[in-house]
Length: 265
Image 1 (cartoon, rainbow, N blue to C red):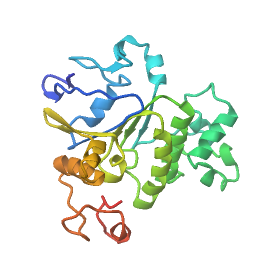
Image 2 (image 1 turned 45 degrees about the vertical axis):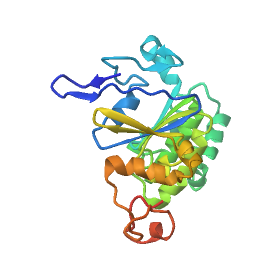
Image 3 (image 1 turned 30 degrees about the vertical axis):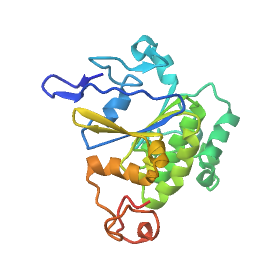
């Protein structure tokens, strides 16, 4: 399929074709402007393709009622949308059919209870507009709890940890791993830690797309981490960790040193 925002801007996605198996995690990497977010936005029909089709269960997404289509998809992005309402209602947003017990179960699974329990009003604590009275990690956990509560079979993670510091990212990554279990997941990320567990890595590079399959690489005795790193480095030109030149940032001591490489996980 192909997509463009306008004839004067040229093609953003050109003849892109791949299939995601049920329950599979596919990571999308590429330079800024390569069309990663545009590509995943075609699934819930934030935009429609001009050429080709996007299929869900073998059916063109344009043939579904929009509400039915979007009920099958959860999105966790870098920009968390929170409202001037209680923590409970922010988690239960767009899930009015869920019970209070289900809301609280989703909050526990996403470790929202860790900071809710410190609030005098608990779940009834009001949030400022856009949740500015919470940290970035806390806002992201509410977003993850919201997705867990919605319990959709398709999950889109669009730079879900990009705005977090190292410690917050490590903690939120645990909740994301839980959220991804048993779901068909599309992941956009620049951080190696986010994509190295993917079943496949698809690189968007201009008019071309290429694929890496870490599981096959592992079978060939090529480290999975190296495969993921090669995919990222090919399109983003990420430097190796300066504390261990010439090697992959390994998430050991380098990640704990001040000023360490942002890819050290």
